[in-house]
Amino acid sequence: MESTDARTAPAVIVAIDGPSGTGKSSTSKAVAAQLGLSYLDTGAQYRAITWWMVNNGIDIADPSSIADAAGKPDIVSGTDPAAPAITVDGTDVAGPIRTQEVTSKVSAVSAVPEVRARITELQRSIASAAVQGIVVEGRDIGTTVLPDADLKIFLTASPEARAARRSGELKGADVAATREALIKRDTADSTRKTSPLAKAADAVEVDTSDLTLQQVIECVVTLVEEKRAAK
Ligand SMILES: Nc1ncnc2c1ncn2[C@@H]1O[C@H](COP(=O)(O)OP(=O)(O)O)[C@@H](O)[C@H]1O
Ligand SMILES: Nc1ccn([C@@H]2O[C@H](COP(=O)(O)OP(=O)(O)O)[C@@H](O)[C@H]2O)c(=O)n1
Image 1 (cartoon, rainbow, N blue to C red):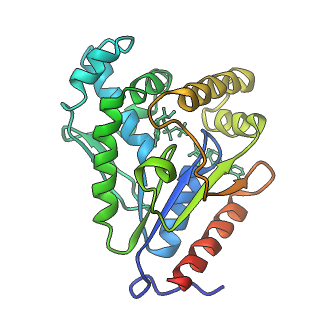
Image 2 (cartoon, rainbow, N blue to C red):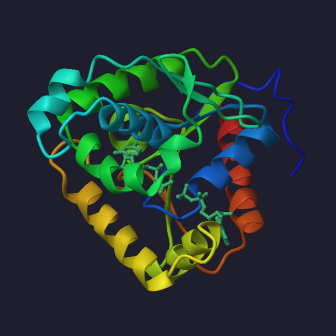
């Protein structure tokens, strides 16, 4: 299918949710770049606020300390899919937010309602400022952040496929240990009270276990083009 000219196409809001390692970031960036849309990695925002909490000595085991500090860091996200950027109080944290320490603490921080309220507000204002439209990826975009999104995708994949992908990225990381860590984080994210990881009732579910990344991208691009054509 021929792509619509991004400058004349109606703005489209796309929500892509799912657990870790299902391909959300890679798919969202590629779809946004191909269709001339903005891109927002909401996981990076939760990682950024977690990084700030760790760096400022906040006790991650104490939700009320996290809640009290939730309004302090200034988090700014870039929305260019070719160069996703994230800063906290002006410092580039794109690297530091991917450490094992942040990864192991992010679910506890993101479960705190005050953190979610703050980050959700930020996400909505970024989405509403995206003139051509935006692809927003996370855990609760279709259910809570942008319930009126034009298209909602829920990506899944087997724990084995996800662990193999992640340990490939972490160069030499043990697949079994990576699989356990992923499952632990999924369980925490899916069972928290406030805005858990969940598939929206009107989301299209795509199991990426046996698909190449290119196939997933093509599938989502086609679905977005169909939505745009119907607008
Ligand atoms: N369908 C796929 N097949 C194989 N590898 C994939 C596929 N989708 C993503 N990957 C790879 O898996 C890793 C995790 O993908 P990512 O997009 O970061 O997932 P998520 O954002 O859901 O955590 C990346 O190295 C990516 O290149
Ligand atoms: N919309 C979102 C996005 C992420 N998160 C939290 O942020 C964490 C990191 O998200 P991420 O997308 O960077 O994780 P990966 O899938 O890249 O490993 C998740 O495990 C959730 O705890 C969330 O609560 N809500």
